[in-house]
Length: 334
Image (tube, rainbow, N blue to C red; front, side, top):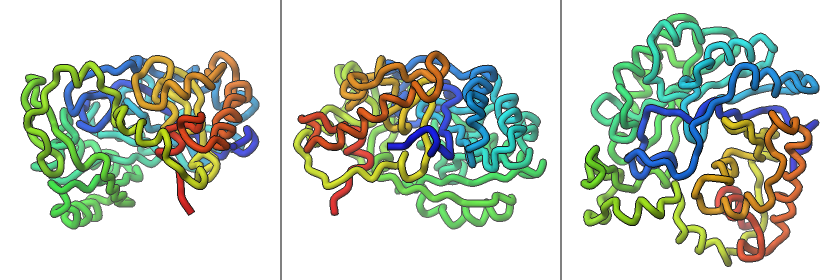
């Protein structure tokens, strides 16, 4: 597992707040507002200063990514000040991921500063984008991205490929080039390409992502037992699953994750608020997680439990103690 001296990058969730209702996000139940145990919190500018200046941590960093498990960085009330402060530390690359449908063009213009890159989630054109990015406005995202680019900012167009938008991929690529985006990030996630999207009444289904499945699906008891992306059945499948090794993202990227309450995790996958959030694998994680809040215990102390994560990999399967999240995310067979 990674040591403090090895850290080259931080992945930071600035806020758990988000105005969007993306169907496969764990803050929702297939697009319907539902809090499965996550807190509504954010990191302050003072918090960020404390984290980055402790033992001059910022001096060893090559990158910082502001991208939340549950929220949009731009909905942190001090987001601009935090990004600007981070930029003054001389960290080579600062990346901010966003749905881009918040604030005014003038707000986004202020982010057009050296070493800062903004990744705008644009999943298609106006007629398809909001089939997944619910409660966002395509024209507003384009307007904000244009303002950022025209002010000199480096923007990336992030495109999740779905069945309903794949025919627009080339058009989006061409539009990104015309607007001055510096990159086009194509994401193909099977886990987000199949499922229902509830209508605003919370009872009927508005539309389906991918092929329609169970039209009789309603809220009822399913909402009460909702566990985010994965289900208890997914967990059960991993109880006796055999893998050869864990190809840990944290080790490979030399990156650790800080959630919006200041808790430190090896990665964002383990950082779905294990103490309160109903999510498969969280019960395992909270048994070995201790003293991991960097604001309360400092960075090095908050990393000590990482050794328990690595030790779990020695077990043959989930039933014996190997972490479900590690197996599900980074488990590999030779």
